[in-house]
Image 1 (cartoon, helix red, strand yellow):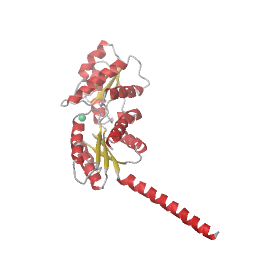
Image 2: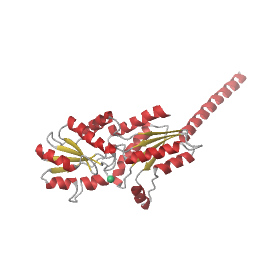
Image 3: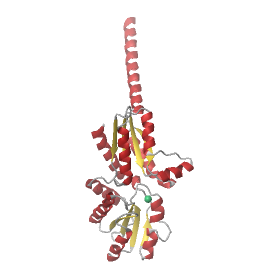
Image 4: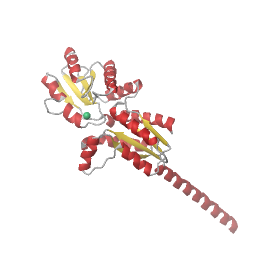
Length: 294
Ligand code: CO
């Protein structure tokens, strides 16, 4: 009887020991093997930061096995934040740190809106990291929000779902996209505007730096005898452009320009990344890339 107890005790101890060891190994793997680098343009506006906090919280739930890091592509914003004591890495520095820490798998998610300048620089430099000796075994990059015709439909549906309840069918909505005067991917905004107008003829998308511009939209508002216009950011965060160029009191802001032309204006200060449906589209890109690349 006594020997049976002894054997049992040993067996139990072995089982506990093994499972402890296994979970310790899993822990080790989780902390050291695979990382997710979330890359965005960045913002220096503290109130706009909540959009990134939202992405971060969703990422921790959706990808619990990955170590999550952030990087900002904008040097101007990183420099500005550093002066306030907030240190944000560039994607290159964040990748170098992950490499030095011994991560084998790295997924880079481009939290940009279009595959424009920022995304191309990020792709080029991320690919260079994959060439390094004794570095990562797997490096992948997941593309920005608007990367397929299907994305445009999904994004339009998500954005229309979150229009302010006070908006009446004859009130116009203008989303403010960033736009790019220098990159061919700027044409995606023209496509996005077409997708919106097909779903709702009073919904438009215009951009700050590319096409369509606000000037191209205003005649259409007049032709439709629009009285009220809702202005919303079509950017990851409701940051500097949304606060100043869209809703600011400066005479050159969209709100001022439209008000001067007789439209009554209401601005909504919610960044796209505050909507879970939008974040899910980015995460789907990541899931797809991981399925193919790891
Ligand atoms: Co800008």
